[in-house]
Length: 637
Image 1: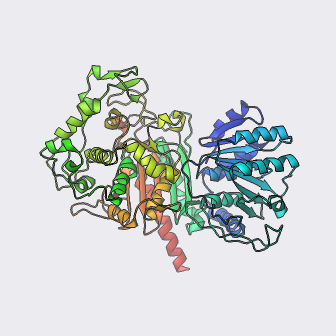
Image 2: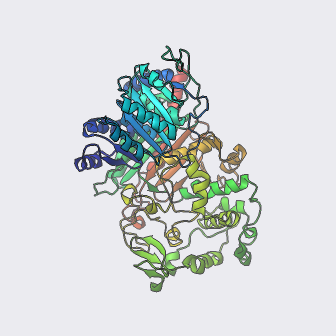
Image 3: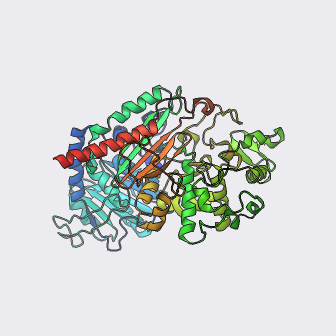
């Protein structure tokens, strides 16, 4: 995870040596000042690997060497790779470990990590203080090297922590310190070459981004004999260079110039692109700033408003889960689950699958804000005005039930059986999910998907969980009804007025989280050793199901060769979002594509559709060409 240099320098200037500082979201570091240079250096490592084929070929050789030499020990219980991410609280304790920032950066892609450093700690009292700081963590990772000194105080500290916590040891370099761990029955990872690539691979082995097969080349103690070593499997996304999956980095270099041109043309001020192939994230990079004239530089883990990507990352998966459980029948009418729909003549017999295909005849969009009266709004929060739609802007209680929902049910529809893209379909699906599960949509998807997957940023109502500096603004002046900056509140007026949680919009996420979620779908519903959907369910919902359009159930698919390009396969699926978001999965090429932007900034009523640079499909097409052209070169050779 990137550590923003401009933020980091300020933080280190105002903290005493040894004081813990929040250097990046999710990653807390307990560093002495002398580590500053190393921490700054890791920024380039964590953002994206070099877009240079020659450099990455050497990098790949180092990665392969690290993969082939990493040994997993003491894993008879099968703890590694970590299976259960829900509720996981990780602390990395570094003791003379040379590449701690690299290790932390990679580990933080899997789970929220707090990092501590024992440099300068010598006495028992100081170790006891550190021991007590670890009390709230349920996984402690000790990283040590061949030159780490196991003083009596340090060894006692390690033994104390191991007796009370789940512990994993990572040892780099000379294996002699393995003898110090001989009597501690905890998983250990050893690799002989003390390199940045080794640190990255070790972190990935812990969480299953890389599998381990190597054995100890030499014996060190009765517990660590020559030939020792457990085989572990890859169960999650890994992080590597494009060359690791036969993609030439030079073929991706044009992405930079394309996006920079788009930003200059005001297509969007802030962009994040993530590319994954064959279960490896091979490109993740941030461009621009949160605003055109601002100072907040975009970071790879920034959080964006998903807009309609909510439909396929929250609402449709919730329907899929209920379909899997046979709790709903998509051939049943919506009115089977929502009683008030029975009183709407043009809606009472509309089936769930018709809504998912956007063939229900619902009106595309309702301008609910046109119904607002001055008495519906307040600048202050109270029991009478509890629904927060922006900073200093509250809507009266029960507005959705008393105004929005009746308007929805009475809205006219005359296009049933034809493809007419409609947000109303997903308003309906949210109500179905909540009626069947007796749980709010946001709570349901969080419990069923986001927490178990280890997603760190994905969810509704992000301002309840994150500082707004992490969230990219969508409009400088919402000219629909709020007339103010919208940052951390859903851009869509209807979702905002419904309280920020709706079936068509309201979800926020970052690129890494989305890559995990869509890799799970690419894996036919399996990720991290856990099954989220039956393979048949994924195929049913993502395949073409319409006789009048290209759509699947909820998911968009390729409409024609113009978008997203000539190389897109018939198996591909995904969705776009009004704010400038895009997710795409292509099983034929085993790829995941995430594009996040705030193209609605500064004024979505004026800028939407103005730029002639349609970045989202253009970058995807460039990615396809890099893969397909690269295949042709390999086959020719």
